[in-house]
Structure formats: structure tokens, C-alpha cells
Length: 90
Image (cartoon, rainbow, N blue to C red; front, side):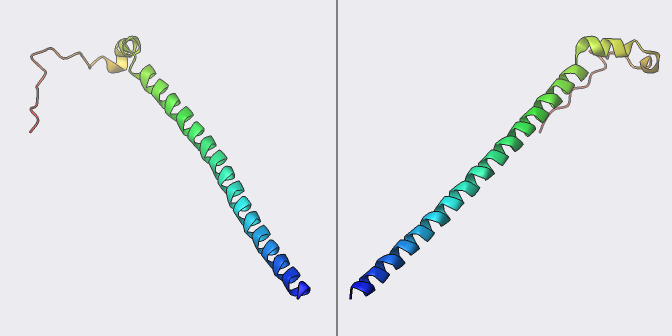
């Protein structure tokens, strides 16, 4: 009888230990995934900031005026108020 209860306790202990290890491994996997997602997010944020800086530099008025003075863009001019046509939204 004692050996049966000992085997039962051993079986329960082995089962609970296995479940604990499985949950712990799942937790470790989620932590690794969280770190990789944080790195990916940081890379995307850095790329977004770089693109925003590129757009800001491209649309800088002093840069646009410098480009406008170049010979290859001599045919372009700033439109007057009479040349601007406003379209109504429907």
C-alpha cells in the first residue's frame, strides 16, 4: 500500500514538474518574442524619423528657392492668384 501511494505521489510530482517546465518555456518564448518585437519597433521608428527628416529637408523653402534658381528649372514659376484654380469637394 505504501509503495502505491509513493508511486502516486511520484507520478503527481512528475506531472506537476512537467507542467511547470512547459509553462516556464512558454514564458521564455514570449520574452524572446517581446525583445525581438521591441527591436523591430525601434528600427521602424528610426526609419520613420529618417524619412521625416528627408521630407523636411526636401520641402525646406530655402532649398526649394535654391533649386528654383537652377537653369534646368528656369521654365517653372510661382503661380499667381489668377492662375490658381480651386476645385470644390463633393
